[in-house]
Image (cartoon, rainbow, N blue to C red; front, side):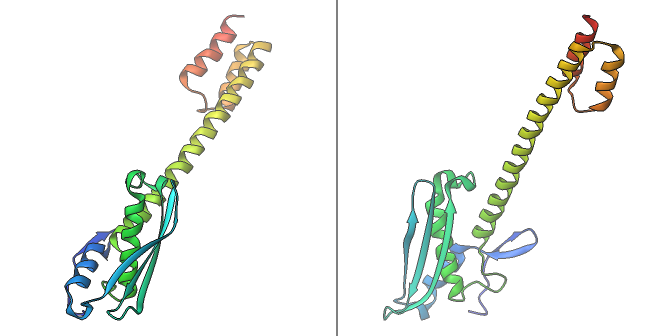
Length: 184
């Protein structure tokens, strides 16, 4: 096993063995003749799943196990394949626990790719929520500025408002505020 050269995938500068490479090695290596791989789903619903893969020797003794969890919403691929990805990850982890393809990492390239996708998805959601909050904040600020200028419609007050909220209002919003003052 130590001399076998696994195909790897470079992810962010580190080499990861693909699950299919671990599985091919397991199926083709004579010392694993008669061994089995079984996967059970410990939890499964319309949004997520948890899978556990067990590798047993030819006498039925459990030699290694791997567990994985996937959420349907975590990536574009998982929208249609979260169950399959969960099973693949569990198989890859069980094979890693058996010692196959762990020269660089227990995690497979599939697992790392999915983890990155989840992380990027989370970052995108956070950025989206921040943008949404900022948009709401700008709407509130604009409404306040609008109310103030309707009560105090002077060029001086317009200048103060625009200076105070420098860069916060769009050009269209600034023009609307200017229209309030110019209509007095």
